[in-house]
Length: 354
Ligand SMILES: [Zn+2]
Ligand SMILES: [Zn+2]
Image (cartoon, rainbow, N blue to C red; front, side, top):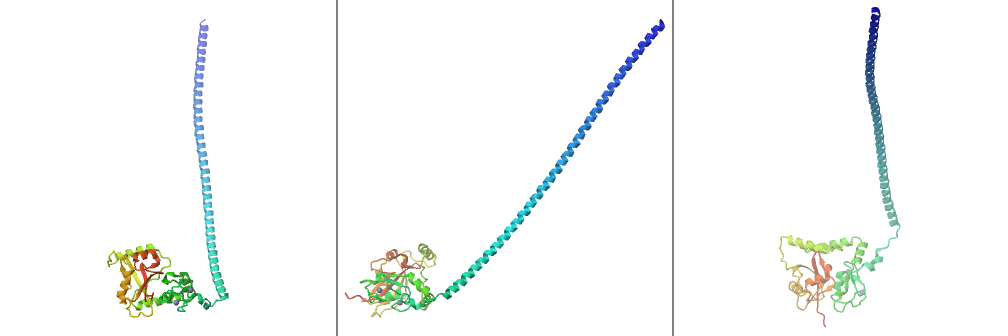
C-alpha cells in the first residue's frame, strides 16, 4: 500500500516535473520567439538602411545625370554663341565688301561722269559770244549791261547809269524812240536782275571786274565801299540787327533821327557846270523830313543856282517834294534799302520851258 502510494506520489512528482518542463519549454519558446522578433526588427532596420543607401545612390545618379545635362546645355549654348559670332563676322565682312563695292561704284560713276562731261563738252559746238551781243550789250555805252534796267513801255534794256543819264535830256527810248513817259520817264523803268545774272554768267570775270572797279572808285575817293545788295535778304532780321548794333555802338544817335540816307549823285544835265561835289553822302535824318528838305540840303551843300532843278529818285520812283522819308521807305519797301540805308539818287536838270 505504501509502495503504491509512493509510486503515486512519484508519478505526481513526475507529472509535476513534466508540467514544469513543459512550462519551461513554453518559456524558452517564448524567449526564442522574442529573440526572433528582435532579429526580425533588426532585419527591418537593416532593410531600412539599405533602402536609404539605395535612395542616396539614386539621388547621386540623378545629380550626375543633371550635371551631364547641364554640361550639354552649356556646350550647346557655347556652340550657339560661336555660330552667332561667326555669323556676325560674316555680316561684318559682307558690310565691308558692300561698302567697298559701293565706294568703287561711286568712284566709277564720278570718273564716268567726268569723262562723259569732258567728251560732251569737247564735242559740243561752241557758240561764239558775239552772237549774243544784241541781247547782253547796252546800246548807249556799247559795253556789257551793268545793272540791267528795262523800259516797261518797249522792253528795251540798258545799263541803269546809262538810261538814267539819258533821261536827263530826253524822255524817249534811245533804241526805238517811243515816249517812255511825258514828264517822268524814270517811272517806267525796272531793274532786270535775271538778265543781269545771265550777262554775268555769259561774260567771264565781268562781275569781278565790275566789283573791283567799284571798289577802286570808292577807295580813291576815301569812301566806304558799299556791300553788294543781297538778292534774297532776310529784311526784318537784317534791320533789327542793324538797330541793335547801332544802339550798342559807342556813339549815341538821337532816337528821332531814325532814317539813314545815302545820297547818290547820278549826274547833271548839259549846261549845268557850276556846282560843288557833295562831300557828305551819308546823312541821318528824321523820318518826318520830306524830299523838299533833302533837296534844300543838296542845294546848300552843292551851292546850286536857283535856276537848277534837283530830281530825287528812289529805286524807279521819281519823288515829290511833299513825300516824307518814312512814307518813301514804307511804300518802296526793301527795294529802297541797301544795308539798312535808304538810297536816294538825285540828278541836276534845267527846268523844262513850258
Ligand atoms: Zn550802258
Ligand atoms: Zn525802246
